[in-house]
Length: 382
Image (tube, rainbow, N blue to C red):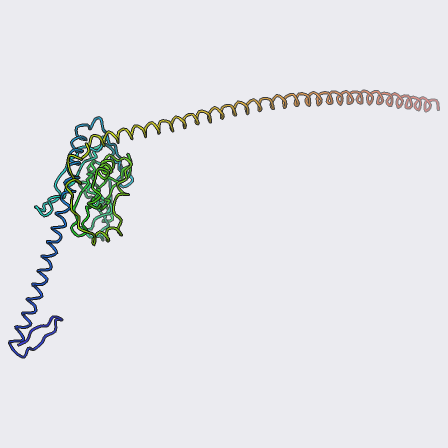
């Protein structure tokens, strides 16, 4: 008879007593592991229960924010544009705000929730993009475009067509809707509140797809944090990232004193009205628009002055060119007159020379004729 030791090797016990001792050690080890697991679960449950009050505090504000943004969707617009694979864009307003329970965790994770909304394109119901899968690739292997769409929770349908070389041409009909969500989760391991922001990166109208994960101490859950979250939802400049915990502080918080919510800390009577936060954001936005208006006006004034200076310079240059042309024309006329005068003088000299040459030729001809006549007369006399 033999049995295995803990290292996997077979041993031959000397007696039944040794077998019982080995079995007892194994049972004791399993009980200890089970007890440690139960202790760890209870510890995590207690830690999470301490995070429920601040989570409910945030949730109360997010419920009110969702109601207000749905009611004031025509007055308070949140425009955003997403680039899809650098070829197509989804552009629209964030609408249909709602707060939902995250997952199905029962009472153990009852505080987790999410604030969700959508950005639907105002131009198209869906986008069309294409990708290829080579013949040597597994049919279950996702293409780059398919992986991109899945990673960013974008709905799509595919239609495949076989090419001559055996590869597959895949047409993607992508729903022109981007799902945006703020997930608030209690983390029983770190004792912090995790915030996962889905598809709400960037600022203003320049939206970025992807997930951003932040962690906040439950001690920092207050009106300032709520306003920072609201500003982030509204896609306005926010201090949310600077208020988040850094990884080094996350490690320190594990050994800190367990968080206990004070009665005065999360008192609903001390909670500010979410409408006041929206009002402040609206005023800040108007002030920013005024500053932008002043900057645009200054830019326009500078542009006008620059254009005026350019026009003035063009006029001066044109005038200088015209003046230079006039001077050149005058110089050309003087030079032309000089050339004409010299030409006339030269022509006169040539005519005089031709006249002299003709007269001289006539004299020579007359002399020659006289000499020939005299010679003929003398010859005749002889």
